[in-house]
Length: 544
Image (tube, rainbow, N blue to C red; front, side, top):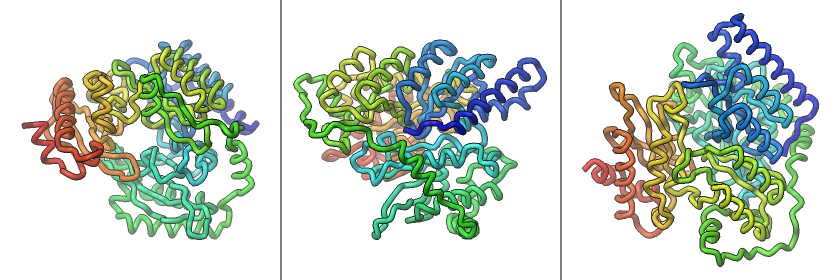
């Protein structure tokens, strides 16, 4: 795990004091909200329906027990005893007082955390595979590159005032666990036939009002040219983007307007110029950062056998435990989706418990996932049972990873000033309807994603079943979408038909699931069946 050096720490500490002064001037009336807004957004502070919300960065989803305990402390002292993990591997607090925001940032700085560029028209938190460094199928650990990108793009002068937010993701596995092609700039680490490491590059993805799946611009970009290529992409977008219309400012719109071929041509033209500067790749800096990500001190010759005589434990292992690259170890997923709970929410007490488990059983490392769950990436198989027992005692042992109750949901109209409808009650009602373990197992993999407005913070475009909350003549209404995916076979969900009220959308999901159960073949997942039979049969089952 990367650790701050004196420059990192000084930068974050200075930023905290700058923001403390800005908050003081706002409270004293020396700055109005229009002047204050861009300053607070650059520090991750939003003004929501009921209070300020603070979004804290967890770079590429990696953090440790010390940091988790600080997050628990913040939940207790400054919020209402809980935090909410988001679809960008961050955590946010929904009940923040403005006067206390600088104190929170100061507390975060003591454990090498911040809220810089978690909002505003900037390059956002770099996301990565939550199994990175442990996954059996990865080429290399992508996190050193993610950290290089994070350092390069934090306070980058030329790109500090972008037309709109810009999202970067990087993975190193054939399996996409980060929704790669739904990002503005996405990288998959690959090796060419000569064995050289480089990047498969995707550009122009994004959700929201006008969703687009990123296209592949490069089959193989040499690793030592990455930063020149990224700067070329940013420069083309920064130069030509629509700054006159908030709905047309994302890079995906420029790609759409220019066309993929012309956008790529302009990027390559800029890229050629950057290469002439011969300033791209600081190998010594990569080596310095990569040294922080060396594998942990694994024990050797451990047994791969797991005692599955306890049926409940066996169900949890089958669903929540993933193969590890190191014999005798496993990756353990922690569900933040109890049937009656709020997706992604975690109490301060639960945070402390996860911190204890990470410190004791996972080489002091935790991961946040874009599906609003947590991961212990380095657990000995011999320790899985005791880890599971501790999770059971804390209400964190649901065995529902990627099942119908593992619903992604944004905060919606319960918190967000942009939302048109509530997301949380819909997610809860769906989870409760399918709460029976046997029923979930029968349905199999089914990814449901709920957004309370067109901004798509709940990733409804990428849901096998997506739900979008809209305002229908002053009432909350919900559109049902089918066929989306954020994996390596990325697809965009399509609207099935007219919307529903809150109870109606839950019933509609039930009818879609029952139709799938009737028409599926063999071991087909919901998304496989939908792609084979198409929308029409589902529409008839849903609407009659």
